[in-house]
Amino acid sequence: MRILIVDDERNIRESLQRLLSLDGIDSVVAADGCEALAMLRAEPFDAIVTDLRMPVMGGQELLEQARAEGIRCPIFMMSALGEIRDAIKALKSGATDYLIKPFEPEDFIHKLQTAIASRRLEDKVEVDLRTGPAESRLIGDGVAMRSLRHDIEKLAGSDATVLITGESGSGKEVVAREIHALSPRSGEPFVAVNIGGIHESLMESELFGHEKGSFTGAEARKPGLFELAGSGTLFLDEIGEMPVRLQVKMLRVLQERTVRRLGGTRDIPVPARIMAATNRDIEAMVREGGFREDLYYRLNVLRVEVPPLRERRDDIPMLAGHLLARLRARMSKGDIRLSGEAQEALAGYSWPGNVRELENVIERALIYADDNLISAGDLDFPAGYRAAIVVTAPRGAAAAPLVTSLDHLEREAIERALASHGGNRTRAAEALGISRRTMLYRIKRYGLDG
Image 1 (cartoon, rainbow, N blue to C red):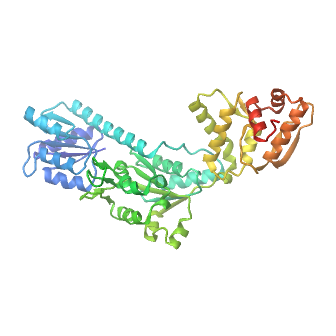
Image 2 (cartoon, rainbow, N blue to C red):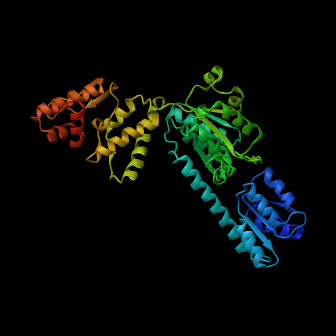
Image 3 (cartoon, helix red, strand yellow):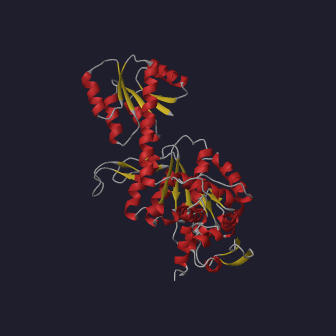
């Protein structure tokens, strides 16, 4: 937390600094509005506390100028005179509160912290609305995951830009969040945006913001995601999808650490740490001219490669259990577990869609599960999947491991079970250890309902 104190009386500036320091709040001072405005243009602050009457530029003019330039932090006006007109004018101009000197220190600190917390909450709500829900945390304790965690811990203490590479669905955003959570910026916002999910015509406005009237439909000033990230972390997923024309502006942001809103005339400081991710061969894109080489080098200061799920199979049971628990809670399901056969099937699959595909498979199985155990037969894999799975044979027949296409294996097992039980689907399902609903779904899928 960093506060700007503006007052032409030195003893008041120093008294407020001492008061804030008792609560562990960092602060800097300015002697008038002009000095304060220059500081506000150079770096962001969590709040401003300013006197009303000062030489050169008073508090009211500072307030109006700050709000006109899009400075959104809470601004507290102070005055020894309790003029109602002054208070009304300040509040109408965007002041957070009007304080009459002398004021109670405890009351002032409470108001200050409440206003800052409220501003941060509003920013978080806006970020969530514009960027979507957060990804899960990093799960697993295998060799590949331990190596990845070691890299994350090394990178967390740095402010350098990070490029995270890996296949789609492998957990690149999760890695970025882990780096942020372990960094000194962990108390600041983490803003994640999927570049590939923003229409090209809206991308510049989303990232850099716009001023009122800067284009048709711009009815009010809108801060960009760079601004909303504040002193936290901005994660740019699918950076390879950024159009070349915007790559030029992105390069300027990384070089100068400032952004300028569409239609704006002022450069806004960007103290946020930048992380980017891509599932594409970005070096090949650079060679082919699809991605600027200078921007690539600005992003690729520190590098993390996220291993695909097939390279960390020993983590699959733990990860599957975590995803199942999360989905159970979201879907208000009971204590449904994965059978040993189901876990073997999950571990044997290659997972081209990585963690995202694993979650989808478990979610579908959970939807169709009638009892409290998900069997291998409840897992809906793509056609052609090959894995060694032990399938329970019908009662009275010898159980045997079958290594074949899962589709062929399932069809054969279902046909045998139906034949052994005279076509009774409920009894056949019980013999195979799957639910009746799953049996009906498989019968329809394999065209056995005739």
